[in-house]
Length: 390
Image (cartoon, rainbow, N blue to C red; front, side):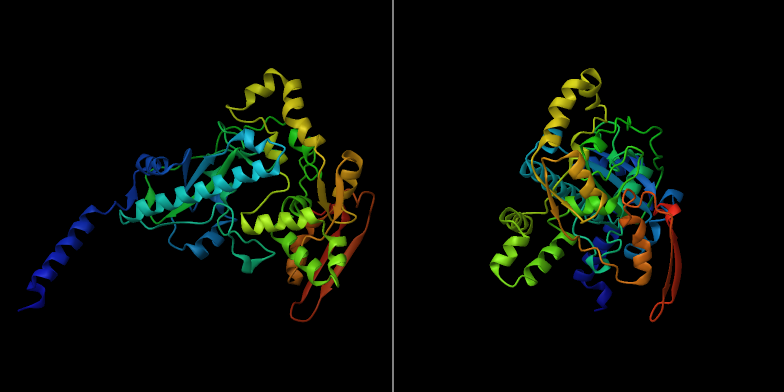
């Protein structure tokens, strides 16, 4: 008997033909694709073409990991604002961790549904884990924020968080990448929900959000991410450099040790998410602020400002001066943040990130750099550039 005529082979061929006939078309209907995301649990969704000009700075990273990607499905998952606004870090972290897991679950459900229809789909993590072999450089090949902006999910506010027109900044962002084009794509939102109230600047414990829009990333990173990333490596160095238990306890308070345990055993924790908590943007949130600003400040902003807590700063940084001046009731903890350049170019690229503009006020200097050896690099840093360019 010819193998092709064998009953088992024939049944297999029939199944293959049936599957091929049921495959999704090469170009997917936009509304159908969005409905799939909503049915998977997304609260809002937008589509963007991988070749969109706004994504030019991020396209290489995406295609290096997902070379077949053609359409990016950006979606948001809502968070409970009252949990984020609670003065208890435990309540805030529970909301962050729960929503992040939910978002990754939605992405997995969507990719599985699309895969069953023969559509190539994958997703990167909503937050963590990241590609840590690239530390301390860019460890997230899929940048959810600019993708969400291009897909019409909102715009970045004064606090550098994405502001959804309805939900405000109380959202988690995620992206699903698929191997097909769509019949239509979304455009960026035609207005920015940010009302420039600058409450985020008023409540930030380390002062990294300036009224003029300046943002000092390293100061935010040092405090907010104390229990993870660079803060963890600094904690390990405190352990290894301590000669005795007493020596360790001089460097690390007992609550800080326990906080690190919680972050390791339960989930990553944030020391401060106040810039999200106080933001009144979004149709669902703006009413309470515009109708009674005095009550809003008393009920939402002041409790976070008045909270007695440890604030983690690099010695001599703008943050240290800010806490001493603005929040004398908060405890200053001088720490390291684990940000160490791994190359000469990495060092130069990091200068705008770690620049402390207040500490450099009044300086008029030029620093020439010459690196030799494995890297031959020359660069000039002028203080008049205010750390924006190297």
